[in-house]
Image 1 (cartoon, one colour):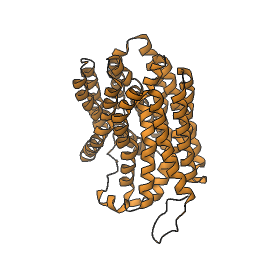
Image 2 (tube, helix red, strand yellow):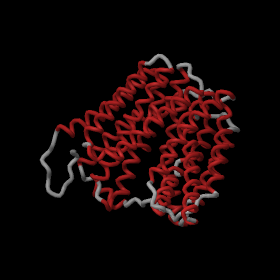
Image 3 (cartoon, one colour):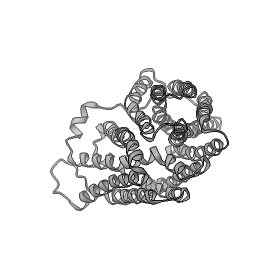
Image 4 (cartoon, one colour):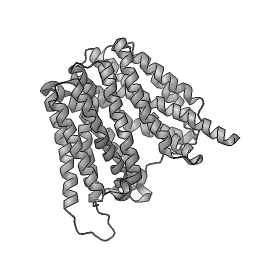
Length: 395
């Protein structure tokens, strides 16, 4: 009974930590762009700032994961990263110059991005040790994202958006506090096997899959970067932006649960095709919408677009990649889905939004989703004759 109570306490503190960490993600994704807009930055400048994050994540994730492996600790690394976020938030609150903010936000992102994979790794280790379902811990991240997005919206509607960095310091401070009570684990972050990169990249099916993923990710990252700006331009206050983020986050939870239970019974390529078409429809509707309320309701499509795609893509990737190269394959997927697509969408999306307007911006995002849909459809309807010892991108 005593060991059971200790396990429950350990899991509870970890859930609180993950809940709060994803609250910081809600702030960064939804309200940092408004903070930059309040400072008077152009849409192009905001795009450049957004692009810095994915670019720096390519390096920072590897460096901090290596440090975690090297010193056999996740807890201490998380403590350093959260302390770094607090310090950089303080410096961001002290300046309004674009060049200085670019420098500081680069350092901020180097502390921000590694927190998520390391906290997930801690959750996986804890779940395995106590024979719990990882999802029963990780789902508190989605709940935290949704609730914090809503609460932050109401807070920032009552006080100036310029105080966003103060809110950032408070949330990171709360996560830092919870870190003190979680049980440390030796790092279990999978190392990337670079020797396997050339081997797996010889698979045409995998290259086609990653290309489709990149096209779809371009549109989604464009939307991520400028959704709050779009809502703001349509007259939404911070509280309505919070509701939009909450609806997006909560819409994906039932999809995750359903696909976890029944997804293996469905073919992968039709699901990916459907998700791509839902993304395209979603971006089209946002592009032609003329009210913040309609954009808010469109966020309910997040579950059937992102939710279906993400779960199915991970499942398909695990089938296409040999077990000994899983870490390498996941790294390549992350580069396409998050880092490279975020860098490109941020660098060029801001200029597109500023020079051609919101409608054409979202029409371009729709176009990238349709390219992905065409790619998945062509692979589904064209079934090449299987070759010996090769895996086919078919389902």
